[in-house]
Amino acid sequence: MRAVASDPPTAIGLKDAYRLRWKRRRLLWRSWRSRHHLLALVDRTTLIAPEDILLVATMRNEFTRLPHFLDYYRELGINHFLIVDNGSDDGTTELLRDQPDVSLWHTDASYRDARFGLDWVTWLQMRYAHGHWVLMADADELLVFAHCDRSGLRDLTGWLDTQNRQVFGALMLDLYPKGPIGAQSQDPATNPLDVVNGFDPGPYRGQWQVPLGNLWVQGGARERVFFSNRPERSPTLNKIPLVRWSRRFAYVNSCHSILPRDLNFAYDGPGGTTPSGVLLHIKFQPDILPKTVIERQRGQHFTHPEDFGPYYDQIAAAPTLWTAQTQRYEDWQQLERLGLLNSGGWGGR
Image (cartoon, rainbow, N blue to C red; front, side, top):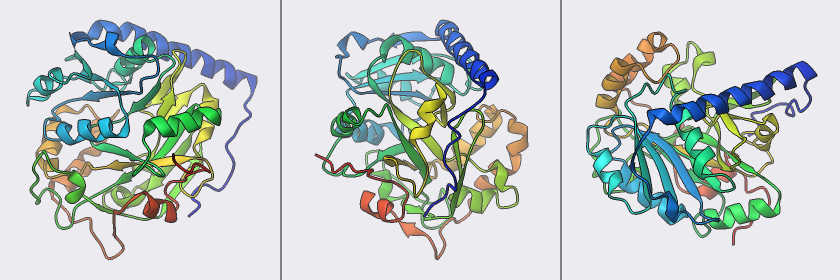
């Protein structure tokens, strides 16, 4: 599968370069100011060693997903978690506070006004993550990459360092259950992939954006089911979640794009040639229906949430996403055969 038809736009004019330089400075400035919104509940950052691999996230009411999430990423090689809790009331705060490898901050400020949490986590990255490999992942995202069954993030990032690569891109792959969404049952201590494991092998399409130079990938299950009549508004599926961080870097839109702009060129999409992984997006777990009701009321997840009422309504109707073309997730080798991730010459440890 080759979803991207051309090479990235590596050259831009002086005016665009000047604008992007100032855009990055503005983003860093507002992130620095956002530190006043954060109250440290548990600060264990003095435990961070120079070569530790970090994970940053903003979370709200993820109690049922956190046990597996934390265990998964610890096993993969995360040494310390930097997490902003945005007003949880389901036990998430208490669970995270008790973890010995978590530093936790609290805020009740608007997630949307903080660039969907980016201002907060960018400040944490500026303050604590300079020089570290850092993974940005939501509680419903599990990173897989070539040889992850026998090699961890320490092995992968070590190889990326030898290749002079500062970033590692990924496709966000929507997983869904068999049968109507929300109709399943699940123990928080079990592997969610036992319940949510179907995916669309394609089609996916991508195009390069000017002047930022970032890739824009769309397609897959959510477009097929929820945005078939307006595919241009379907979710962005490319991310740059793993970065050897510098305090001069700034994500622009979630971790879909980043500045300086040349960092975006390191991910060339499904079927591409650069080393890449997949973020298994397990959004459609059994708790999706009550979460949808709450998030529609909060209106914090889109710039213009009033335009996405039909999307929430369709999820609340508990459709069946599984079709005859659905594939059941097996392992990273399956994803590489389908062109959804690429080892890029890395053979694991």
